Image 1 (cartoon, rainbow, N blue to C red):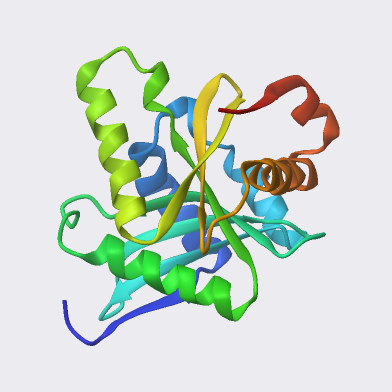
Image 2 (cartoon, one colour):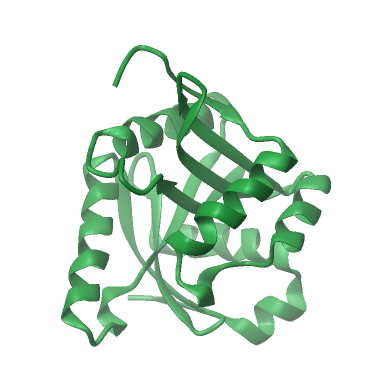
Amino acid sequence: MTEKVYMRELTEQEMTEIYQSHLVEDFPAGEVKPLAHMLEGRKKGQYEAYGLFEKDTLKGYAYFIKNSTQPIALLDYFAIVRGLRSAGYGSLFLKKLQAMCIEQQKQLILEVENPDYETREDKKVLMHRRIAFYQKNGMQLSGVTCNFYDNEYRIMYAGAHCEDTKVQEITMNTYLNFFGADVVRKRAVFHVL
């Protein structure tokens, strides 16, 4: 990596291109939101995306759900471009995103796949590695779980210790704000371990 690594907000066209060429390949189909939903959220000020670049070449991307009623940012998708993983870009990008949230006075939260529900050992190992990556880079693993659209997640957050009940509250409020009460009532089940 050189000193020319920088982060910037993505345009709608870049969001679309990255979605089509990277995101749909990098995440399980059951976890991928429709692009139209993301772009509609962007127009409403509830969704944004950032890219990590080096010499104008994309190295990674991060898509966020923004809570319009509270200072919370839910990291919806985070990935480094295939072939560049394990080269330090992920840690650098996550630190830049955390610094941006601190500057904007937003609480950063994210969902990670819950390995407790995985039966395949190889997938379970990858899930534990993702959690360890986030923990190594300053994220805290809460005791909050969520089943959303039949996907099992653990909720993580940045910063100092936060009570699980508070983590559950801010995550649920962010879901309600973005997806609406009908979807959350039908599709989201939160628990505190």
